[in-house]
Every structure is written in structure tokens, then in C-alpha cells.
Image (cartoon, rainbow, N blue to C red; front, side, top):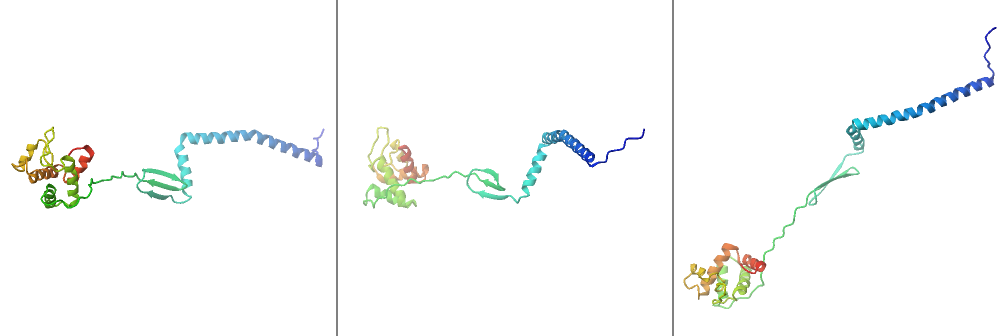
Amino acid sequence: MGRRSQDSSPQAASRRAGVAAQGHQLRTRRLLPIFSFLAAAGLILALTIAPDQVQNSFAATQSTKGPVQTLEIADVTRTTVVRDSYKVTEKKKEPVIVVRTAGAPAVGTPDPGSAQAIGHDMVLARGWGEDQFACLVSLFNRESHWNVYAANPSGAYGIPQALPGSKMASAGADWATNPATQISWGLGYIAARYGTPCGAWGHSQSTGWY
């Protein structure tokens, strides 16, 4: 018998085309999960083996958007913040040190010949000003009220309340009765220990003694 001739009618061609399309769709549905799996596996492998390279690649892509701008803020905490292509560098704020000099109420001109008048002349002779004399007046007012014979049970004596009073003998043998000798010794003590009468007055304000 001879070979069966192939049906070339339009109906047969349509059937063959439909069969072919169904086969293609079937193969596509079978391969799609495989391709998805391979893509996911490749991404996971890349992140596992070289995550830094992936991140650097991403950073390089971001940097192409434009140059990073730098803003420096002085005198604040040292921190670096990067956001929206802006880099903010903040510097550490230094502590503010406030120096206060202890002062005293201003005083008028002392009575001539008084202990305060003697002290005023000695203060100016040392190159100190009226502000220093005001501090000395406040200091000796607290200690003895400028009384040459002021005595304390502790042994302190005189206008500057030297302890013991006999220390003032280094300024003169009449230390027990002469206000000039006592004030001279007192100013020497103040200059050596506190620098100025206001320095001594500030210490006395803080501690109650100088």
C-alpha cells in the first residue's frame, strides 16, 4: 500500500497550530519555575560570597547622583551624618569657663589718720586700685572691724587677725598697738597668698576665712 497522504485542509492546519501553541505554553510553564529558582539562587550566592562588592556597587551607583556636600557646624558634639547626599560634620563643643573676680561694695574716702586711711595709702602704694581697697575694707571689717586690739580666743589678733598675733612682729616690734604695722603685715600676707585683696576677699566669701 502507498503512504497515507498528509491532510492539508485548513481544519487540519488549524489543529496542528493549536497543538504546537499548547506545547510551547506547556514548556514555558515548566521552565519558568526553574529560571526563577536559578535567579534567586544566584542572588543569594552573590550576597553570601561578596556582600561588600554588591554594597560598593550600589554605593557607586548612588554617588553618580551628584557630589557630596559638607556642612561643618562649629562647637557642637563631634558626629558625622550622611543623608540625601549631604554630609554634616559636627565638632565637639568646648566647655565654657566663666571666671569671676570677687568684688566688694565701693567705699568712700576714709577719715584722715584712721586705720582705713593708712590702709588706703598702702594699697595705692602697691599699685592696686580703689577696687582692691574696697575688697580690703570688706575683708578687715569681717575680721576685726579695723580694731587694732581685736583679740580672738583662738589666738588671732589685730586688724588682720594674724594667728598667732606675734607673727606680725616681722613687720615691726609695735605690732600689738600700731595699725600701720598690722596693716603692712596683713597686706604682705595677702599678696603672698592670694595676690590681691580681692583674691583674699573672694576666698573669705567662699570659706569664711582667709
